[in-house]
Image 1 (cartoon, chains in turn yellow, cyan):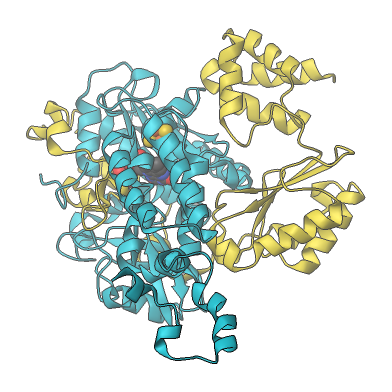
Image 2 (tube, each protein chain N blue to C red):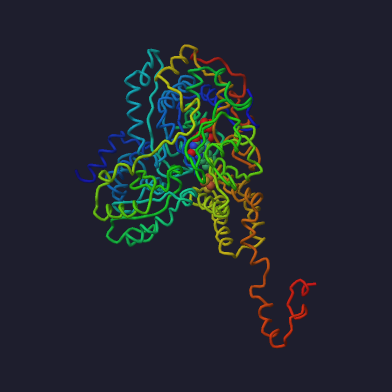
Length: 242
Length: 391
Ligand SMILES: Cc1cc2nc3c(=O)[nH]c(=O)nc-3n(C[C@H](O)[C@H](O)[C@H](O)COP(=O)(O)O)c2cc1C
Ligand code: SF4
């Protein structure tokens, strides 16, 4: 299958739908390695968007590349916790062994090594992404082995399976993590009760940033009562589905 | 219905607003972008409890009348895509998704997993929606909010993974049971992602109200100097605050809990966070694009030993500008780590300013030592004393 067939395959899988561009770009890149100018043109034509708009999306996200980044792209998670576990020394050793500088692609076009924002493996770092697949618990030994695997162009699927193991490391489980849901039970209970779970309680569980910084951390983006659409601030009517 | 702690959208309020907003189609989005450094609890929830999360989305669909759901999964968690799709396929087979769910005609709902591609800003709900529409992840102007004008301009609920899992639990077990966990104003539990200097990093789920001290004891943290709670945009606290509680009424958190013991240099911690914000600023608005870069440059200047008190004052000024003029939450909070630690860990900065505070750049007194030797004098008048000189 040539490149344009591969791209058209992806496009038709997504119904040539532009709102699915992120998935189209990712799947294309997973197949072809990078997003060349020709690739972007075919995609733009396929979804009927101006090319510049497709390019805008492709250029915005750090995981899409519009330049070749090598057959192997190694990204070191660079959260402070990775730093505390020695990621910089490991990355430097890797670069030295591969004769390249961070952020640059090797002369033979084989490999590039760089840092990336926290990959969410802080409890089992230092972590890397190789071609966007997570590898945890890096050590000097693993760096040396990885360099060999890259040099010998070993496909990622043949790398040691234990490298790709991501632990859950659940040390304390309470209601959420220990609950054994028989799939469908919560839904059945909802249907029986006639819609909404206890709204007043659920409200406590909003988890995120809307509630942050209310204390001593300065101003935060905040939705205040007055900015809530009027229909929501008013008394809650019965569920139409009840 | 009360907003909590003077802030924010409550989940129920959001769902009601979405249900009541006019529109053709409604959407439920599970925010699994989990980009805040130090957070990994959504990854574990999606690994351990995917059914609970999907069921929460389906309950949300039932309540709001939504017919389509998306999980926006961060690109870093690409390896979860196939396992999650397998769970969705099973649920479809069991008639927990699709048409006429559980035999209820008219209750149609589908869920699809969409991958992000390495942009922290896409955790912000309106940027997430832009990204889901195939565009650059730039936050929208709000209002209008996603509940009325979200995905494809239709009413949309965006909730965090943990919120949706908890919603399923409430649906299954009832609100009263749920309320029996936690504190008066924060019912239920909170999952903490613990990393940094401790013996047992990992995932800890606690009822709301647990003290920071208890958490530190249980994960085996020793000689702790500071804890960064809720990631770089959250707060940094020292030992005198370890009796504070994890709860909306005290320290609210998205779940990141990074521990630094006394060996660590808080300045380097903050420098890492500032670099993160500078890297992740989407570049759309000037206060944040320029502000985060200026903060980064200042940190480098201080690190190189060229910082002065003037720079510290500039940091406060910049932070005020960003808080008032930035377009979204990233810009509003990017200065937080600096401002907090300047208050609580000032020596970490002043240590680096010292050389300049005691200018001049070359030591006059040392230069005089040869003359002292020649004249065999070592009394106080033979020494260069800047304080005297200035007087
Ligand atoms: C810069 C920025 C990044 C964010 N990242 C996330 C994220 O990774 N995950 C998340 O659930 N919410 C994130 N949020 C908050 C979302 O905008 C939104 O409030 C949240 O998903 C709502 O879910 P909840 O009501 O269930 O807490 C972020 C907000 C901002 C301003
Ligand atoms: S504040 Fe920063 S991240 Fe938010 S829109 Fe402006 S530039 Fe983008």
